[in-house]
Image (cartoon, rainbow, N blue to C red; front, top):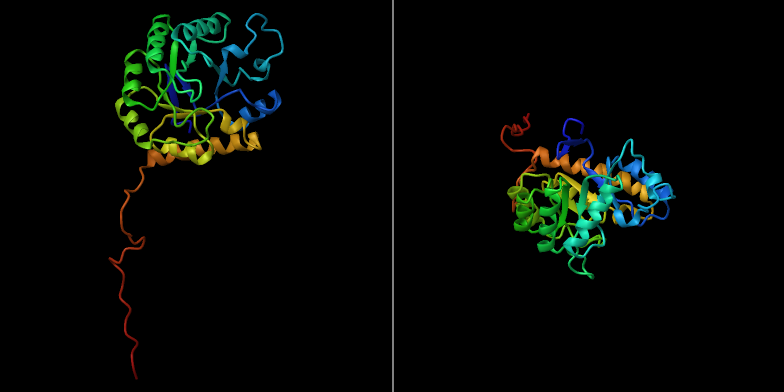
Length: 265
């Protein structure tokens, strides 16, 4: 896949899988899963990091920053102001000027508040943040976020942590048509086939956490996701055959030599 890199805001990644850091049984398991995934970018919730004392034991000590790029996120923020403040804290603490921007609009579904998300995106872009907003699978919202300066758009496949897979394939395909920035499917992936489908629909990458961290064997699942993302990307680039209502023989009859009659004596 080195000949087909993912480029976001001028930064090149050879892996199209982005993974998270939450819900693992231990930091050690998380580190092993990260290695197995082949990912080069991991998300870290700013609110889970002790910014006052970076020397204190934390998950950051289990992230190989020589190999993995840290993408801070604003998980747990319900207003634009709160998300902007959290992004600033992450940058000031030296995490990154990149941010996976989350502004949640509903506590039960964890669906994004697109109006507040757009407000926060505009504000952070003006402050030279590289903004990757988590949004609904709404083509109009994605287009507005791109116009606001987002470096990528990250529509959900299904509610966070649900494992339901891609619920609206048509919307993902439309989003692929209406935006030119990278499209990263974020949330809802439950297993490897979900990741492959997201890539086959034209996504540039997939971000996941629960599907790996919550698996019975997170390390093996991480490897499965790595392979699924690669397979889905190759399938998309290859161009699938059209769907047909009726059968089409895999061995065409054209050119087949008819059997000759057996000579009689």
